[in-house]
Image (cartoon, rainbow, N blue to C red; front, side):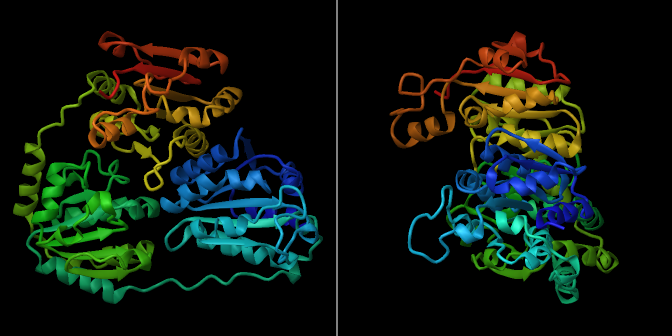
Length: 534
């Protein structure tokens, strides 16, 4: 069979049901093989959007997301989404179809031998777990198997395979293929015993849940540990939608986090982190002061993350997928105590005053929206002022999930990501944007319209680039430059855009209009006009 046929056969055997792609000559043989497959191919209108859609799909399914495109600009347009997958540890496989290997420059010190020739492998090496060109047809099984294993295991992330056309169309004998050997699973008996010992000695323990728990789908196991030992749960920003209505959750930590959660960090005597990077926004500049009264047990699969020092910490480099089940198996060895400490933490949470939003319309809209969004809804949010409004005023229900570009913090993520999320869950998706970010991939409204998929696109239109305005207000005494409608920026006419893309349209102008909002089972654009960030 052809290599391209083998690739699709491999995907089918590994239960791949959806692929996102954009046509090109370089991936022609792969596309031709895909055309007769039961795998559903989703054609978006820009490769960056395709890469964000794959991120959304993988985030929602916890399976590997797959995208293909052609060489040159096709590959380089994927870079932002690949970087997003790298920063947020999203398991993804990007296949770039290249020109014939025989026609490429290889080691020659020139820019190109053929059109659309670009070294995508080395461009993305710093932001992938594996990036390689397949130049031997009999290596195809090895690299596909290694790509799947690497993307999904350890700290998840993106991998890229550059496959030239002459390799794609080469004939192979399956019996001659080289295969990847999967490493053995890990045993963490010593680490589990250490954690149990520290919990038993502690009087005021706290658990921090990060993206690693969300990725590994271990939320219930952490909750079991919390309930058995009466330990309060804190989360990072990325995982703040977990345990929404559970009493043991205090809140999320960090600069923009909950006062009560940050206070628990400073008062606890044992702080165990599960898959949380503890970056600047979580611990601030003075890392020595973070959790200064506690012994910090930091568990992360990425050894490099553990090299960033904290005060009085015990570092455990371990894969949560194996460590946590082994910990849960030994729960009976943990003493049941800490009830007074947990109650104290819950009282902190109860006493925390609700933040007053400066933007009343936005706050009321988010609050009302949360009432009508179904309990099992998945929500994507872009980057901008509206993300803060979602965090502070949208009341999440249990089983609702929020997807965002949290590490790269990329505008333009939400709209294409909502497409990936839809194909993951096959239910209506809420897609929240600002008037700036939505313009970055607005062409994908045509995909939503073409396929008539039920995505409700919400645009919080404050007629400015609000986050940058806030920065300019604080740092440059309100010298707004290219961020407001009087300094070079202008928001679009979203009513006309909705009409052009055949979306249902609703406009929210005031508090009375908020009560009229409706979530529809078809492509819908809801524009919420809110005051500028002044």
